[in-house]
Length: 343
Image: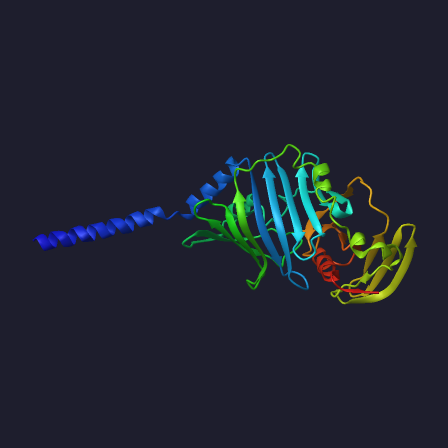
């Protein structure tokens, strides 16, 4: 009788352990509720991450610093891990949305609803919003993470339809995001190395003046090349992807303060690529207003509108215009321009 009682007690104890363990595992609804609560309650955060992109001709890596402060203040600093002077900042404050290139004293002001206009793999609110909006999101758990597979919202790039988001089980902050193509290949990966949910900010941390001055001592491309830059001819960059078109005409124009090259492409999809380098020292300027969206080309950030895309890289200003290329094709052409040059 004693053995039977002992066996029953052991069985009950084992069942209790199983039940308690099951109770300790959060459901999808529990996790969603906590994620939403985090977003609603937080007053700000600072995050550090590395982003790798395989959406162009070769892999690009960025070091990213993300700052957020209520109400609706964002600062995302992206620095190419290879070319340190190509640092850019996406800034949102009470005055609007800007993309800044401090070393070149260039700034664009966007008429856009960023960051709500599309998915942002390095912004906490955007990731949680994508999870909340996708009624078909797939949920699973690991020993350390809650993992969601959701649809994305990249209006100008349908080649990235899905993402996997890893949230830490203890803090509910993201630790990794993998953005996938239709074949489930990870073309964009963001790995967070730190995430501070109780940061301190200075009053002017989100001002345009402070952020434009943040890289004032950085060397510009002209300074890197030395004093001979003014006499050096403009290195012409040609796209590797041309949507079935070929160069019809190359026109070179000498400006008072630099050079301009106009490449006209003719074929299945006609387009024009303008490249310009200015040799005079930059002066603090009013931001150039853009009706369009912010697009990360991999090697730099671009301004995309209905029929144009423009960006700066390696001291050269680029503008691609076409009434025939789709927005996705314009992005593909722009991505392929990087790194291909000839005198």
